[in-house]
Image 1 (cartoon, rainbow, N blue to C red):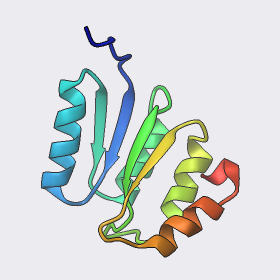
Image 2 (cartoon, helix red, strand yellow; image 1 turned 30 degrees about the horizontal axis):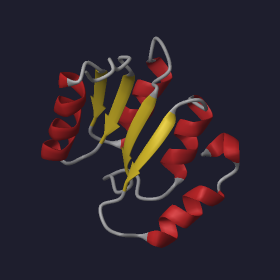
Image 3 (cartoon, rainbow, N blue to C red; image 1 turned 90 degrees about the horizontal axis):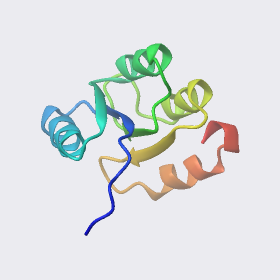
Length: 107
């Protein structure tokens, strides 16, 4: 018998409606509390106004208002204990390497 999962607070930041829906729907069906944002500004607002910190943030790296690691840095500043899953739109090893080089409190 599978072990019960602990429900998590999850934020999904992605500008593609289908991706945003698919990720959030799957997580919601698994019992997690999911908040969605379609751009970086909305994602930062969600992090800043959350009643409790998100356990996990799924972050698209290519958004209309953010396509670098500044948004990741801001999220890590506001929510240093939240795990962040980067979802690059394309295979960009340079960006992943740069993300790992951020100081621990910014990752």
